[in-house]
Amino acid sequence: MHHPKFNDFPADFLWGAASAAYQVEGAWNEDGKGPSVWDLFTKLPGKTFEGSNGDVAVDHYHRVEEDVALMAEMGLKAYRFSVSWPRIYPNGRGEVNEAGLAFYERLIDALLAHGIEPVLTLYHWDLPQALQDEYGGWEDRRIIDDFEHYCVTLYQRFASKVKYWVSLNEQNYNLTNAYQLGTHPPAVQDRKRFFAANHIAFLANARVIKAFRQHVPNGLIGPSFAYSPAYPASCAPSDMLAFENAEEFTNLWWLDAYCFGRYPQAALAYLRETGEAPEILPGDLELLREGTPDYIGVNYYYTLTFTDNPLGGQTMQRINTTGQKGTTPSSGVPGLYKTTPNPHLETSNWDWAIDPTGMRIALRRLSSRYGLPLMITENGLGEFDKLTADGRVQDDYRIAYLQSHLKACQEAMQDGVALIGYCAWSFTDILSWLNGYQKRYGFVYVERDEQGGSLRRIKKESFHWYSQVIASGGKTL
Ligand code: BG6
Image 1 (cartoon, rainbow, N blue to C red):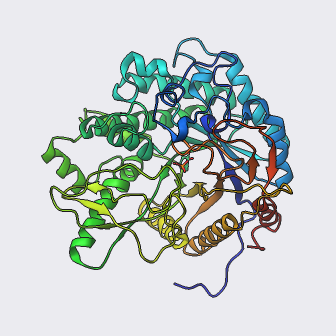
Image 2: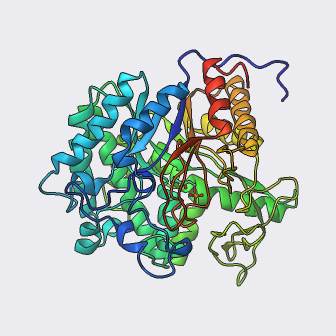
């Protein structure tokens, strides 16, 4: 469908940018913060690119005012950030750490003072280590109460200041890495444990959404889902079936649980056969239905293309974390599906397919299946950037990426999608969990590498470009 002309973006469209606590804050053990699972995991040998960690990150904790001033200069309308649970509850629960709350209050107040809408993520992977040690974190139902208690603390403190909330960030990506690939803490490779922990995370998600209604009646909350829409490699029925399998197992498994309070049928039937299905106790599905989201947060980076995978075929493989193009192997589940490169798409140096049309497809699939408003909570391009001798970063490739994806948003809105806003990933450069500091996403360059650096902020070319797009309400796209 080709639209003859683009409609304008709505006047209240949230032109945003995003970050996450562990990736920007640093100050990992300051002002009463407890350790998170990432504080320990990144220090185990061989887990991250060149052993990089977030001890200092880009030092946002100490540079909040400077960073918010840059957001204001850019004209940003929304800033998505996450709260570090162990900053608020160093032991996961018990005594609250007032200094942690005060830090986020300072950030929120600074944003509001500049007319920037805060979008608060409750959980972006930095689980308190104490809860991992005590009962295995997401593998134990006790986490549901502890997570709710932590979230209610934030609701009570910030209900009058924060309207947009994100419950869990990329539960699908995080737990797949944590319990299938073994690449995020606690680095387990066990599908049964994966589906069990993932089920408990759904319950926690629903519980905090339920509590939200009571404490933040005028706010909006939803999870952020890492949505990589599936494509079939060809119109061969076996590829179409692989695509159906992949869409159910890698996407609808989460989306249907969040929005419909049930698991997709074929996937559940398969897992019951293999003995890997999660244990669903009486009341679980009722809870899921009582805690459905107001909107879906969409983290979109790429589409994935699938082909048939026989029994005994390709298994799950870890991703390219070096930026050496072409090093991502095919990955899949024997008997169900496996990935294959899409010959129609260019890729980044980390082998992520660049596919703006895929974003339009993503938004349309979600909107028509669930009938909910959507917010792009992440979209961006991780690349090697170069700081030139005269202090500039000419990231025209990033501008091209963002521009084409924003146009896809515009088209999706014309297709009838209710899109609240767009948060580019990321505002400043960040620590990419497994890929170190060399995989950069920001509008603002931060002078540091795996070893460290001056932490000076430098506006990239894309900073000025996005600033103009926002000022024109999208007309200069
Ligand atoms: C998402 C995460 O997976 O994508 C972010 O929510 C992350 O935290 C982003 O940084 C990009 O992924 P990566 O692996 O390139 O850092």
